[in-house]
Length: 622
Image (tube, rainbow, N blue to C red; front, top):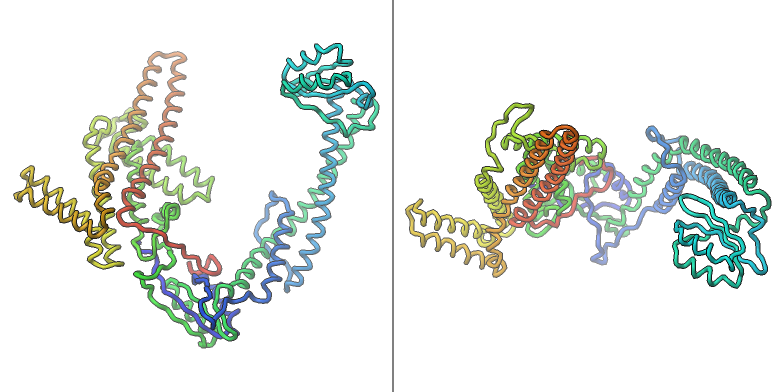
């Protein structure tokens, strides 16, 4: 659990005639993380895709193109292979379906365009109906200009209406929450009218599609609406035909899309290999537990003519892909590592420590039985509604459980010290015993920070030897030890001279300067600041508890007044506690994460690892 899964470096060399079979076998195994070959010598070149690659890619594009023409809301129950025995048959079928769908979509597009035009025409006829204007009046005149205007500003109506000497005809009607204006004015007044309109928000209605129409706008609108109904029926028929085709072909297309994606990945796999005219070579990594299976499989398909080499990864010189190896529960906290940075293969994996501390810090801050139960129910519902956030919701569920545990420690239930009239036992009253809570918070910080230094010592010792671990990491612990010795001696708790503590502290500083240089000495104050940073556990928790008590106190005062104040009290309790829970969750999340990322990780964690991404089927040997 403290190390990522152990890997072998793998080298495979074989006759080129077996290349396609080896690729198929590796794909089915789904265990080898292939390292892409970078040309570095004259003997080997980068491999070329198999001949079938281009054809498979084109067929895959055709399948995806057909799927893009199908409605997204058509659900299918599973996937079906269809009755194709060769790619030729699948290709011919895809061409036929694609042509059929394109014809239907072309027809649908034309009808949709017609539908939009008819809707616009009907809308504009409705405007003329409101204004009691026939469309034939909206033509070109030798001395008169006209405009149809939409506005919500009554001042524009008044201004235009006031230009009586320039306006020949002026009509106004209520329309869509505003004013619809028809204004006919002398052409030589065009500039004046435009100046007036420019001062007010408005829209000029274009009526080009009504050209050539004559008669009552009411009758014309009814005719257009009848035509619109016919067009919409045709659209429904076409959509239904497309849905029927989708129900029939979508399961087959989804199946073949998956198959072709696999085939395309296999066909392009040689691009990662090194090849010569007769030989291929690949390098990569494989989990140790899968090594024997890979060896037997590749030897079997090549009649043991293949060369396989499994080597230990030299952690001091090389990196390898990271595959987490955590039990159920802890694996959820990989989410935080993926969000921050993956550990290097050579490092201690801190996921377990995050899994142990994050929920505890979260619960320490929020710490209320009522808040814990409420957030637990909320997170369970969210996990069900958003399955793609399952890991994050599981983390919050663990944290909500710890909130309930700490709620019993503090004896708090929605800020009160009782549940249904039963007094809760209180181990620590965090509002009154703040100093005790502060000491506990700082003690947690001391343990967590020093654990980080210990992990740093282990990492450095493993990678760079005892001397580097001693000077770079152990020196911090020696400095701490010296300070503690000085304090205990000055208080006469231990029978040693105070100078001994000073000497140990100075020795630690010298060691640190030798190990990390001036940078380490400059960062000495962070030893205190990082430890005191854990006081935020106490501070954020007291703020949450204090706000809960204030909400309950004010609500109690309102309840005592009776009548309508009871309703206000209930609303205050609900809204106040919901807001406090949300703030508490946010603070619990941010502070718990910060204490791990900033105060803990900086003592030992380098990061920069890359994920294990094996070639092949995702369900195999993972």
